[in-house]
Image 1: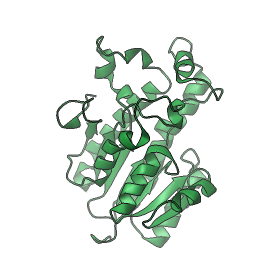
Image 2 (image 1 turned 90 degrees about the vertical axis):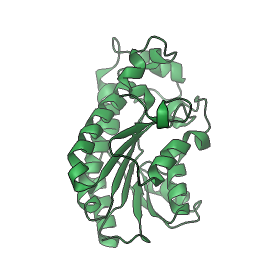
Image 3 (image 1 turned 135 degrees about the vertical axis):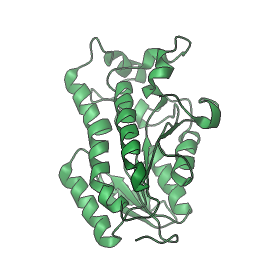
Image 4 (image 1 turned 135 degrees about the horizontal axis):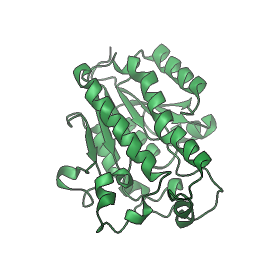
Length: 257
């Protein structure tokens, strides 16, 4: 069982972007952080940039073998997990080098490739849930464990149903709707885990310039990471929360489902 001085976190997709910023904030605040990365060498390179205690672990959330191996590693070294941050995601599975507008245009519901849709959802929805399910036994061994899942305001049905939303045309069937599905599954998980005292939070970083959108976002990765970092560090938020960046969302940064 963990002590207050020995908190252990795993961040998926932590070798770059928002995931790396979250990992940095956690190490700076005394966490031991496992840096999940599909490419172990990239994870090790990220660890070298961190001043706190961080450990690279190979993690492909679409691979059962990779997930099981990560669980065994943390189980053998600590026996529990205080915080799971689900950050790994993909925006498309088509030709690389396209602009964000080209990607979104190809992902409209009327013409979206079913194969690409399945590939993206395999990471963003099924892989994220598979990773979470696999780590639940270790989360249950920690006191006050939490699950923080990086989602997107683009997945909000309420936001996208509003004709006054200038970005509603970007709500696509592949990436945007994958975040809607993710929100629904993890809200369900929050309700289920409430009696077990495991909190579940969903958080949107806003329109952040990362590899996910060909670095075309309007916010820097540092600015876009502020809300995910706040949620990752907060231990007193009510479970089942869905929040976004200050100024974009409503009262207390709460986003509508």
